[in-house]
Length: 105
Image 1 (tube, rainbow, N blue to C red):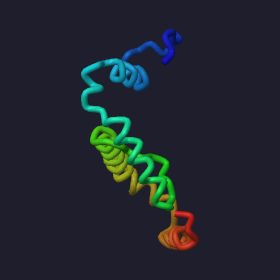
Image 2: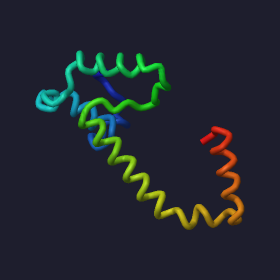
Image 3: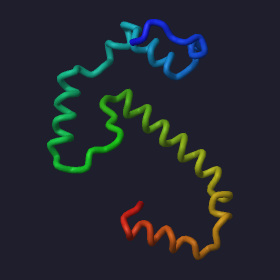
């Protein structure tokens, strides 16, 4: 970890600084998964012979954080749905069907 950081990034409320503070707190490390358990999970993932995901939440904390973020995005998008769909003609849904059938989505 960098010991000296640029003053423009010193605000403790910035996400990176919050993460650094969390990582430095000995109490927070008590709930971390063991490196061995993480290694086993990663080995199992790559051994499946399937697509490797961009994100792999390992542990209750990362699973919960990602799911909370997904829910927040879903709620935000639902609030924009009417506006978003208003820019196309009703027949435009066939474009989405094409993308899905072609494997783009």
